[in-house]
Image (tube, rainbow, N blue to C red; front, top):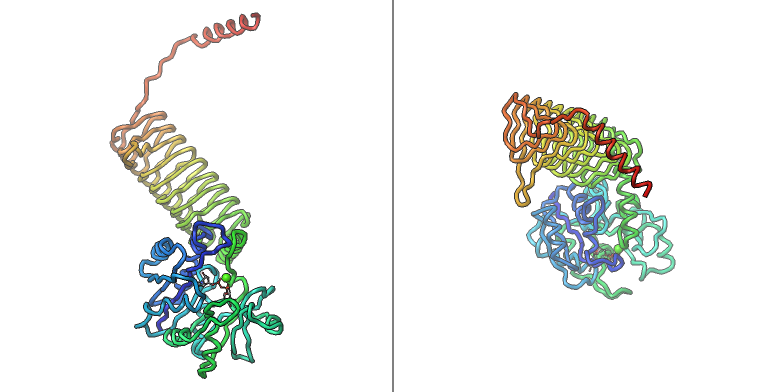
Length: 449
Ligand code: UD1
Ligand code: CA
């Protein structure tokens, strides 16, 4: 069965008090919209249609950044959720299969739940995702009879008796695409809000002799974001869940509540993460690697057996092979460290290739930027870069070569060679003693004055 996703993302999100449309506010470094789109990916949708409205250009760019194939339709005026879904009809006119409606501001629907909905379609024409709400507040209420879903009533239109129902509407709906659009066609707006309500399709389906059913999920999955406070709450809940999932998969966290993960962080089994580590997007940590305290990582890959930190910074394009060591106050950007290579202290390696077994001394800097262009530094295997070496790129250091401490290296160094790029040392016997005497005498006369 092919599946189309329809993701509603036209709303402004007034209560966010923001120039950014609500669905582009980020949780764990990804717009909420991406979280919703990613959840939908579990169903391997044949088509993805995003309904944009407020700041549609920004929403379109973001949707297509995540999925270049995503189609975006415009809802000029936000006349309600049924009206929003109707805008997707032209993009699905030739589509045979099911449509599943998701909300762009409800980022945490799980893949299992969506799969359960797809399965429930075997027994019901319309499937609605419901949840037992601790505080049903203003959610739409699901009116059921045994297994059957009779209708959904919006809070504003509900009687006291209906408001007492705790089974609520998440908004997620699945139905055959053609059926869905034919039901939506007859939804009216004669209600308390004067809006075209998507949930009205349930009662209309029943009138047509179609069946409707409910799939249940945990309330946490249906968490929506309407304000900055709720965004922060959603972030906290994402972080808790992501850390718990990783621990279940065999990752050690010394102080899980101090580690900040990104939406796409991947950490292998038996990896160890010390306190206060921050992950930006695009990080993969292989099994058995160790990320020590206060490190900051983004867009990088750390292989098995590598040790990073404490206080290390891995920036986009940092690629650490097995058993590498990157120590305190080392920054690595767009650079490869071969197996067993070490950069243990106070170093910047940018736009560089470092061969296996090479040791980078404290204070080494790849001078990769001339103010206009970036240049590469290439260092061979088993080389030894002396402390405080400036490697003025483009420059190549051969296998097994050495540079003397404090060298400024401006030309290539042959394999096996020792390069010294520093002034020759001059010694003046007794000079220090005389200098001290002179200075102390001067200080003594100043005190008398
Ligand atoms: C909706 C449901 C309610 C459910 C609740 C769950 C309706 C009428 N009510 O209410 O039963 O309990 O969600 O959170 O559907 N949107 C558009 N265009 C529009 C209107 C909305 O794209 O014209 C988008 C919004 O951006 C948002 C989503 O649809 O992502 C839900 O709309 P919202 O107005 O928040 O619906 P609720 O009143 O919360
Ligand atoms: Ca809402």
